[in-house]
Length: 540
Image (cartoon, rainbow, N blue to C red):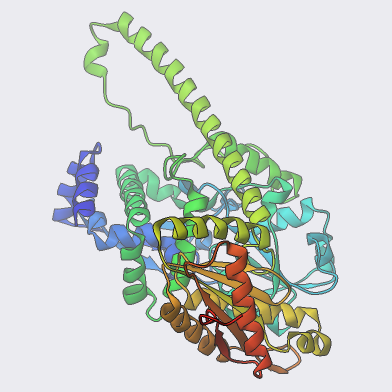
């Protein structure tokens, strides 16, 4: 509630907002925003602003229209069926081809567009898509630029319409255009192995999810366009600060039944794409649009690298200083000169911040890669042991409980020998997904070997650890992996449990006891849980 009040106060303080709010009470103007995909967190800022009533206060009765793979928002706006739309960097192509579209704000500073391909023999790089089937949505020109830049012969790719569901990769489609914010989650949950081909790896880094309007509407209602932008960006700031609230809103009003975990996954990825802690939400750079246009020209998708006149909507939001100009013309020149210098430094500082942010993202990615098992996304052996050692020392020092679960997929070698390693990979990922669903956020999961996993449970005694093991055992027992050939693999695991006692002098000793319990579970017939028990006094 306090956040809504603060946001409303900030909105009211913006130039022109109060006047527009007054107009809103008289007769709100019906305004349609054409989204580029189905309802999801991708449009959280607009849901937030609409829910809080900020659009209506600014003089607009806003209607949000869901998109689909076949809908091109640029065409919808150009045809006068919507006043605003959500597009991407291909808007500059639309403009050259005659669509009177005008960029208002860039919501994602990095595009989420990627190509996801079915993990199979011979699909190791983007160039291997030649001769394959690619499921393509209507507005993905930047991925075409990526393919051409990478030397992929477009006439050797069989392009088919996008169904809106990346799980088509398990039904014969080799690859599909996708967003990093959503489709990877669907594939992980479905246990479908995939590889990602990202244009940013080839130096193609475009804007994503750009708010735009029609040129005629902007000419007739410039203040309304400014108000729409201000409200939308305020909505995005609110959505980022109150993501749980907006996830609830989406799941109840806009997309009933949607997986809330998917929305949370999407929200986190969108934060990385917006880099709002470095760049103002909605920031648009003419120079960057120039580079985007040059990239499209190089790919043969655009004729002229020049940004069309009027393509960028740039309202003048500087205060009116005409009352000062009359008597202080000399001082005005000084002020303007200083302002120009300050603006120059501001732009340079902005670029420097972007470069620092990009470098930080790269460093974080490299650190994550060094600590992560590439197949499952959980910690690798080295990372798991390092973090677990810290937890062990903390638990011993403060006499806190801690436990370890050692997991082994039953008869895993039989899966690999019968169905091949891709099937084995799917089974491994399915088990890891079950671990994530059953264990707590601060529990530590590591892949220590092929089908061997260990989970360290801070603040868990033997009873709590056994309950966690039972939940995990039951969840894995429900896992069924269906292969493309129709074969069905039923997955089970054996679990060994060991809880920290005062006799444990090292992490290695605790892990060894969990392994002993695991061995006992396997010796007893597998598909069960075994708890390590300290030897009784007098026992060896």
